[in-house]
Image 1 (tube, rainbow, N blue to C red):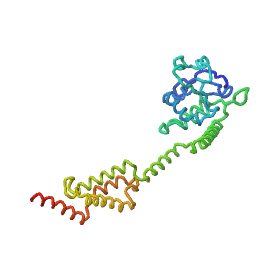
Image 2 (image 1 turned 90 degrees about the horizontal axis):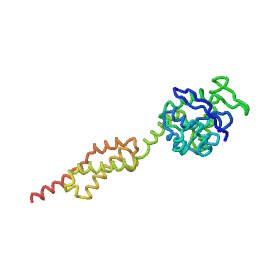
Image 3 (image 1 turned 90 degrees about the vertical axis):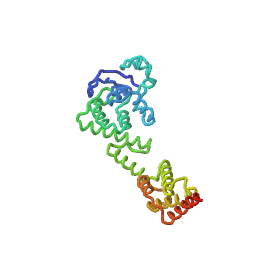
Image 4 (image 1 turned 180 degrees about the vertical axis):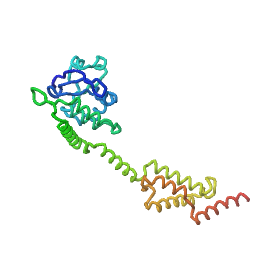
Length: 284
């Protein structure tokens, strides 16, 4: 590992950030995970957790843990206090490519992450090593933009190899969200939803029979046929072999069907007859 050198501090988006070179190559700018956390308005522990959860996605050209790969005295020269050094399990530094990967892994609800990344690349990662003897500045914004696209393309290819999925843009994320919602809606009812349907069928069936104290309810055969008739109504309404196959997007409709259930004439007469026998027996 090339020695890291703290050059100066630079103003970036209202924050004074350390300018550090080395680590991945002489004169190559790097950035501390602590600095990334500050400019993206998150905590350093959260950034470290994100890195550790995805550690296999980073190569030796992306990421270094200077807590384990540099001496304590050297790390302290980069702006860390003794307390920060002692309390840190990891002290990560990232190259530009490593930082680009990390931004791609951040929560997509953070809609400003790409703006921060683009500004940091423009205003901080502007010097690139030309050869071992010196550095060169991008001649035009177009050159820098082309470089950024190339880096994003490399990141996308690596993520495909590691996780079998591409790095997506904000538009792709929205598309994936829609696909996910559609997938969930077309799934069959979940276990919790099936349990709710079963409970509702029983509740409506009990109500249709006049309550649990009635003769019709206590008639196991008749009670079972009432429940079965409600389930038959569900099957007919949604054209499925059983209520478990109803799609999740129809869950609310399925409950409406149950709430609106009406006994068949035959079942109504049988229930009335059974319940009237109770009244007759009570008169005796």
